[in-house]
Image (cartoon, rainbow, N blue to C red):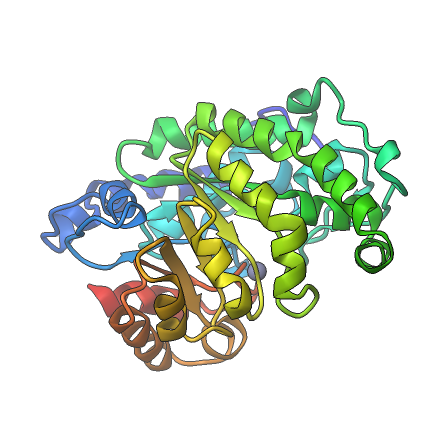
Length: 363
Ligand SMILES: [Zn+2]
């Protein structure tokens, strides 16, 4: 798939160009708020006061409806910077979020490291079709990792978003942590077996994968990302809190220390049993799912880490009504969660009205 720039399709040019209109009448002008979306997001991220509650996304908010609104579709949006930018901008232009996040899938690093990736369709996320490595010794990070086409595409997308929106909207990058990279490169089943059979080998694997998020996060910061999501799927359902603390937490602490961009850790599932450790990691923010009630998350985390989430995807955003979404937002806001957001990558058939209801609830 081509990652070089190419002429916009007819429909896309028109629609993306149309986005300039609402941008001029941005929320700053519209509702008399005192902060730009970027100022609001960065203030919330650093737990400073905001003019109104912040709404954002740090993982994919792309849907088929937003692809149709922008004329920018999967799978091209994963690898073609112009299409990526057009689709990513809808989170601000159409949904009214304070953020734009152009990395939709979970596969760019995997593709750059040698997995064969099936890039999917407009209604299907990409998936790694092969898992090339078996032992820590197989791990090889190419010296030209940052020049691999999927990596170049994202960095170029971030650069263009920074030019177009960077003064006004928060630009969010994303990297995958060593745990998720191991799922892709070793296979989920095989890697999870290894955590039980040979924890020392797991430690070697995670350690050897660490340069990938370190390098990629810094490159994204340089390309214009205000903040970088660290998605690392040591999820509540698959990995115990004790295993997280033993094997992965020390590496998350290291990423927090060594990355120059502020990091938002994303872990799916019920993470209540590891939230205290996460709050002690030095990471700037934790993005968590609705399996942890917002009051519980706030009580465990205290004021040690910024919290982001936790609007339910499958029941509320996908199948609920705008009114139900607004009720959930009220509860999240009352629990003093700094950044209100969908809990995880938004399902591709989510109705736009339910996503817009998040912002409507806080305006
Ligand atoms: Zn998730």
